Image (tube, chains in turn blue, purple):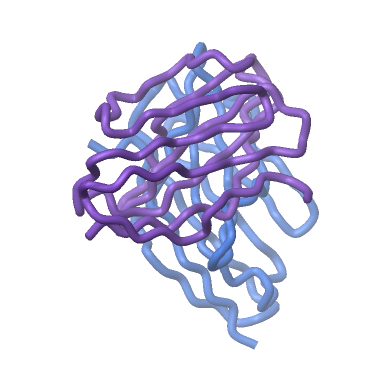
Length: 113
Length: 115
């Protein structure tokens, strides 16, 4: 049973527009959430994270929003650039075992020039 | 070399072979991880080492045997694998397994095919 779900396997947006990647979770013990980006033939690289005490975290063009009541988080990329084209993974960890990340299946983002 | 490196990048082996995957981190981290990514599935945590001690074995079959001789190196010894073990094996490291050290740095992975 998947505890972290990324229901959209792929997303295509135009350069300059906003990309919104979604993630849902079922485990109420999760209190820390991360987004990783993965290019082909490379390992995932950390992008941005958010603790459950916050509802928003921003880093340049990337913003993560957390809605605890809905057990939902989203990653906004604005403006989107062709170099953002990659697979984006949502991950979560629980209090007391924060090194144990549970990942979603990923969403392939394609940003068209 | 920087970051986390893995060798080999690709490996094809028969079910009776014995092979090893190697991971090295150049980040001065104290925790290392093995993950498995099968097709159409999320990354699955296999093993976690903290200061060369195994702290997590996520119900992994004994045909996978990890070894962490020091905090910079991690091996995954493979023996009598099955075709369903074919996957991308990713190594990662983090500063610690303690609080506030969730960020893990990944290597490029080894693509394993078991015939």
